[in-house]
Length: 347
Image (cartoon, rainbow, N blue to C red):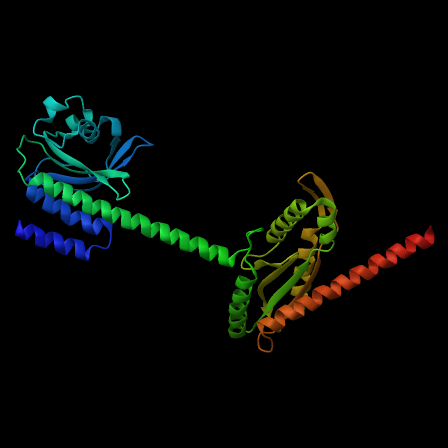
């Protein structure tokens, strides 16, 4: 028993995963019970299945690791329902179990494995193809091992929950809640990275500002729900018009920003900027049906610049793109005003 305690202490101290903890315990459990197969199962009550997660086999009886069996037919279910831990004669006790008959189990001992919150994880079991008595100290050891495994399961579940929570926090910190696009903070970080890469490669960086003209009127006329739906629809349309490797972000309000790798500085980067601006602008124009409202949207004002990373910072790039966008906006406003004046004159 002293040797067992030393082994157990070493296993618990060094284990980092459930498998690290369980495999040595299955070896120790085999030595304590004198039974040829020891194994840990998981139970999925929703699917009605029991799965052999880890097993250790010696001599003739083999409980295959990875085996999945119907929960209703298992010895574990019968033992739990009857409050029985051990039988040395499975055939006379639970002879109706086809799984036990197929595996050739004659001696069987098990205990439930539960988390500290009381949820059933599975069972810790030992079995033999022969009828064998159970040593008096075997059952307390089995229950001790099951408790330790349950605690490890609880720790791993907690760790996964913390990982998931951390991932969600990171996503919230980097994503616009309405559109699901990267937010301004993420945009700035990526633009810095892209500028540094372009500087090394001798290429330009394309930066585009997109402003949804008339958005305030949409909000005032149709309400904020339609306004939000409009922004989501625009995000989807813009995303569909971009190249692989480009990033679309919501800058705030009704403004979006696109950044992407541009051509080499000696390969007409301005032509690439104009092409991107045309493509983005065209993607935003057209008919929209949003929450019962129909909008014939004339398109956003888009300004795109090709930035030389050797002489511009990320802040410079955003400022230049913003200025290009406002130049487009002023030009569109002037054209619209001229058109209205002509219509009045004609009338």
